[in-house]
Length: 498
Image (cartoon, rainbow, N blue to C red; front, side, top):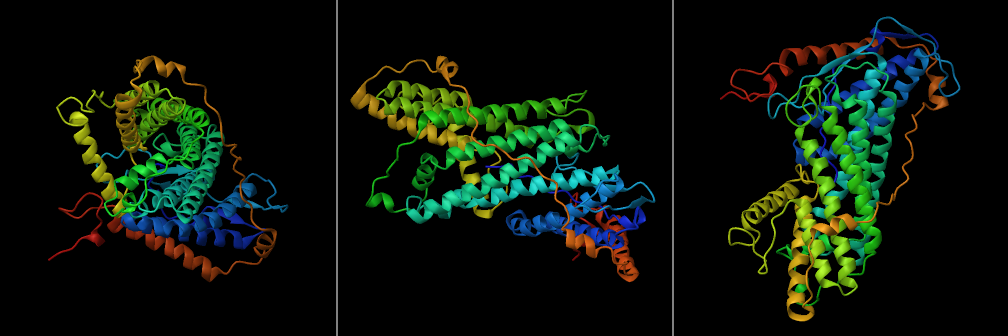
């Protein structure tokens, strides 16, 4: 399950104040209009409740797809490079300066986004637009996967139609994650030589490399989810409205456990590398994980990368146990499950399935039950679910297998259970599943670029500049100053007086 990124917001940018185009005068007006559209959608997304904000993602993605080619056309004109086999002559009136909200910078006040960071140059604008594209791809992947984890979809997980929907959802999410990986890798390569403000953590090359590894790890684990029946059976068993158990026993198909072990190990390596890069990018005198020069990165992303690495490694232990149990080695399978629980940091289980404290799982078990209910509520409301990177769900699957195999071993097999700690060193090496394609910068259609040679309508240009100025004045007047007694982040226009 991908990380729930928030989307940045941008300040107004009258591009005609900074750039002039002699060969394609309409290009400046078109780019300004497209940016105003994108900026309005990003502001609407930030003010929309989380349960409804996903409906705006297709519109934001379309606005980004329309704005990016124009930005690359301006960049080609400033660099004296042809764009779509045409020469674009652009004169620089003043150095372009824009402000964006850094998504990955920790906020000084909880519940309030950090202030916008101003940067100079077209590369700064282009970098944040590309980062926003990558975040939208992550969120679109979450939107596609929400149907798999929603409680309403747990009662019919074995029908042919639901299996087809499940496969399509995973395929769509994988496509978005691989697209995000390509964009993150592109930003990491092209921002290494740029001099951006240290507070703009979203454009840090190490951070972007970490996000690329994180997207690739999630896509690799989704390759396992396609044929992994255990989480779906667990959700079906926990669904109170399910009645299938009354007339049909749950069927568990055979899985390619050996292949899934190697894929899970590879996903754990990618997630571990992402966590190391994120943790190292924040070093520089600060305290705590990821907090250093420029503020580091937010703690939630660090915890997500760490939990994802643990979840992937525990999943590798689970499939190693399934492979051993299929071969008749139930005792070794139980040891692998205990090793996976140890990777997740869960407490050990005794012969009765109880932990420290006299209850099932001990106090950690009670906390896990509480977190499980909270996660179900987030899924029902469509809020920021899956922030633990699937750690809780993987732990519940391991608990179910432990109870089942331990009961069978006590009644039928009576095999000795070896120590679980030495088994971790016998995990095989990882195997790469995907071959991500690099990100290709989009270009304007030649016919569209040819129509931009027409002279610009001065009234339209003045209207766009006036709209940008009005939005900027409104932000300075009401958006950036909180009224007395208001919650931090609530503007004057949102206050209510009785």
